[in-house]
Length: 200
Image 1 (cartoon, helix red, strand yellow):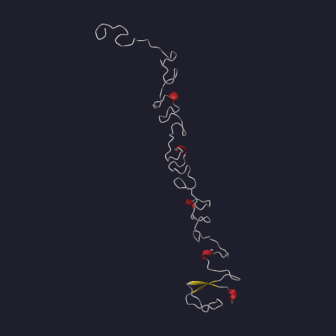
Image 2 (cartoon, one colour; image 1 turned 135 degrees about the vertical axis):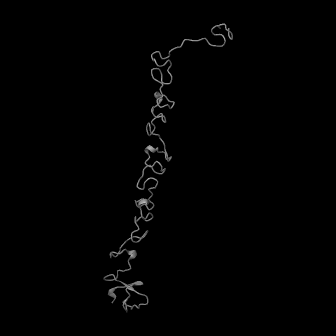
Image 3 (cartoon, helix red, strand yellow; image 1 turned 180 degrees about the horizontal axis):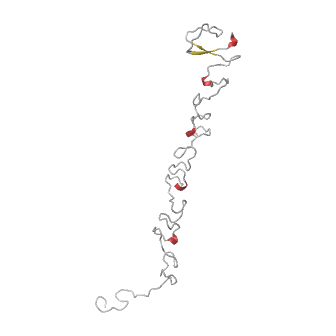
């Protein structure tokens, strides 16, 4: 009996009676039960990720079981957390851009003065009329209203009568009421006097 040298009757001592094995896949020589993939289909897991090939859309990629956005073999990583995976992000480390644009990754394409030229390319980012300082600088137009070839911001002449005249006048020189000089002026002017020839 149980616990001694005598043979026990089948079903005694708490052991269920043995049953003959039943092949649940009689037409599949490699399986006796369906497993995950079913009879006739191997439960092989080529990439060792715990999902058999029959259920794995990326059977050679242990990091994915479906192609996702980037496809098998390429992770759907989003380094800058902007919602666009690196595989489709032209600026994978810039959360504010997905393409370099005009200024490049890491530099915004901001156009502060709305002149159509982004700040990164605009020498006068706060002046909508200029993209370079030019002769007059920020906020001052390089206009030449009298057409004499000198921009207004640097032009000390005045349009009077027939033509423009500019004369240097040194300190302490006397000037007649007509605007003419009484004596010869210095070669190095301290300031300028504007007058018209047609006043003579």
